Each structure stands twice: as C-alpha cells, then as structure tokens.
Amino acid sequence: MKKTLLKIPAFLLLLLLLFPAVAARAEMPEINGSSSITFDLDTKELIYTKDIDRKVYPASITKLLTALVFSDEYSAKKTEYLTYPQEGKLVVPNAIYWNLKNIPVGTEFSADDMMHALLLSSFNDASVVVALNVAESEAAFAELMNEKAKEIGMTNSNFVNASGLHDDNHYTTAYDLMFLLEAAYNDPWIREVASKQSYDLKTKDQTLGLIESTNKHIGLHGNIMGKTGYTEQAGRCFAGVYQRDGRTLGSIILNSQNDGVNILVFEDILKVVNSAFEEDKIIKLSKSEEVGVITVSYKPYFILGPTKEMEVPVKAEDTISYYGNGVNLSESELVLTYKEVTAKEVKVDSIVGEASIKERLVEKKVNLLSTVDVNKRILKTHLLSYILIVLVSIALLLTILVITIKRRRRKLARRRRIEAARKNKRYVDERSKKGFLE
Image (cartoon, rainbow, N blue to C red):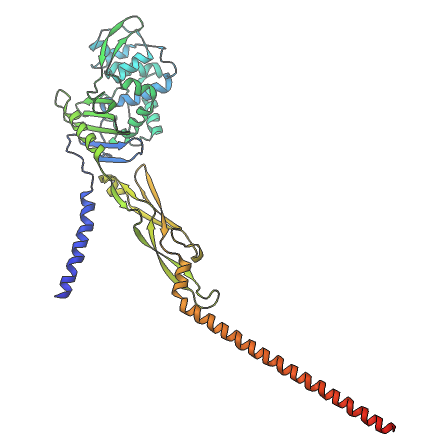
C-alpha cells in the first residue's frame, strides 16, 4: 500500500511536466485555406504552419516573381519605355486592354507604370509586356523566373508563365512562397509600388485611368504590402507583410474558398496575423537549467595511484525557445555537444559544451556551463587523505631528520674519540721517546 502511495506524486509530477508542452503548441486559428505559413521576417522563425510543403498553385502571387526578374533588369531604368505586344491581347481578363482601354499594339508604357499595372491591379497583359520586353518569349522569361526562384531559395517550385494563369506544371509551396515574399519585401521598387492603394496608369501619350490595389488590407491592420491571386484551381490566395510594434511578419494563405467578393481570405489572414503577433514561444531550455552531467577524469594523488572520475552537473547559460508549430515540433530537437576538457579547466561557469536547436532557417545555440569547480571538489573529496598524507610526510621528514641528526652526532663523537686517541698516542710516543733519549 505504501509503495502505491509513493507512486502517486511521481505520476502527478509527470503530468505537470507533460501538460505545459501540450498547451504551448502554437495552434493556428481555423482558416479555409488548405496551406498556410506565417513567419518573422527579421528572425526567420516560423510561427504558424499548415501543410507548408504541399504542392499548390500560386495564381497571381506569381507576379511577385515576375516583378523580381523585372526589377533586376529595369530598377535602374524605370523611365524607359516598354512596348505593348500582340501577345498581350491574347491573355484573358483581368487586363489593361479589357478593364481600362482597348489600347493598340505598340503602345508604350514606362517601366514604372508597368510595375504598377503588374502589382496593383494584377493585370495579366502587364505580365506579358514585362516578359516580352525582358526576354524573347514568355517561355524564355519563365526560365529566368525559375533561375531567380532557385537563387532565392525556392527549391520545390516551377513556373511556366509570367502571370500565374493555371498550368499543371506551374506550382509551388507555401514554404517556397515565404522566400518569394521576403525577396519582394526587400526589393525597394517592388515594396514602394506594392505599398500603394491606387495609381493613375499612363501610357507614353495618355492617362488610362485609376487603378486600385487588389490588396484589401493595404494601409490597414499594419499591412504594408501584399499580393492577391485567384484561379479556379488555385482558389483564393494572399501573401502579405504586416508591421506592428517594431516587428515584421509575413503571412500567406493558399487555396482558400472563393466567396465571390474576395473577403474570406482576408478575414482568415487577419485572424492568423493577429494571433501570430501574440503567440508565445515554447521554452525548450531555461536559463540556468541543469541539462545533464559531464564526466572528468583525474588522479587525486598526481601521477601516483589510480585514475578516478567525477560527474559534473551542467547548466544552460541562457534560454532556448521556439514557436510550437507542427514543423518545429516534428523536425527540431535539442542537441547537446560537449568539449573535451581536463579537470584543471573545469571551474564554476566555465564553458564545457553547447546546446543547440535547429529550425528550418534558424539555429539557436547557448553555451553549457559547469556548475562546480572540479579542483575544489577534488580537494574537498580527498581532504582527509591529503591531511593524512601531509601528516605522514611530516612525520617521515621528522624521522629522517632525527636519524640524520643522530648519525651526525655519532660521527662527531667518533671523530672526537679518534682525535682524543690520536692526541693520547702522541703524548705516549713523546714520553717514550724522551725517556729513551735520557
């Protein structure tokens, strides 16, 4: 019965240790999108994840990649003119020729105006204008897009056109789009254009009319830029950047339901972003927490006697924490590595190793510190034997000293006797000699 009662506290302790880890998991709000990612643009940490490696169609979010390739070619010559080609008339609406004015082939647009047409109203013919003024064909431009995608870290994507119109071979993942959104955010030209709510689109000769951003969050809720996308196969998509209280988050939702008025995906992303800014991290390792022990070898009597071992508790110098999303919880683990150290090197707070946890884009490290001074511990452990050794050594030295003194005294006494004997012998010899002479 007593044994059973003793097991109860241990069971309760186990529950207390387990429940915080379960409760700390980052639970993304319910959304309609089948794939989603929210991340910190400054720290590169993933906050929320939902099927981020799933193959999806990006629709017009593709135009961010089109804009990146375009920026590489024209960011230093924004005022140069591009020619509207016949192929522009062949794309389906949404398009300049359809939504604003049926412009003739050969119409000239400045590069800057075309960037606005591409990113604000997401005109499909603007994509063709960009592609055919940068490359010989849209297929050749798509090759440049794929090269750029690989360059920025998109390893599970393939692009076959500049607009994002559906093609089974035109695909990506939420994780890859994270790299695209970050690259677009870091491009000054794209960032400037995508931050606008509206713009008067012009050709070289006339103003075509006011175009407005398809991003319903621009200027609201901390949103500073974003790109929408929609095809029947891709569903509603959105990738946006939000800034609040000195933090910058990127959030992407893909394959959301089409509600006709394109509101649902924005409601979902606002829920996710609001929650992400408030999300706390899981503490994987606390500052000063003991994480294990190291074993150091030493000889208590210097070069004499057997080698002994001492276990030294090790603590963390600082805290390691991460967001408890599904990717981190399934992929990341705490790794402890230790240095090879001698007993003399191990003192209180001396560095004896490293704790690390690797996320997809971030590796966090803290030093592992010794909690004891090994030399002092050795002295304390073997103090009695050291005292006995000292006492025995003193006694031995005293004994040797006494013996040495006694020997020296005996030698001196012997010398005195010999000297005395010699003197007596000289005295006898002289008397004998004197008597003989007389």
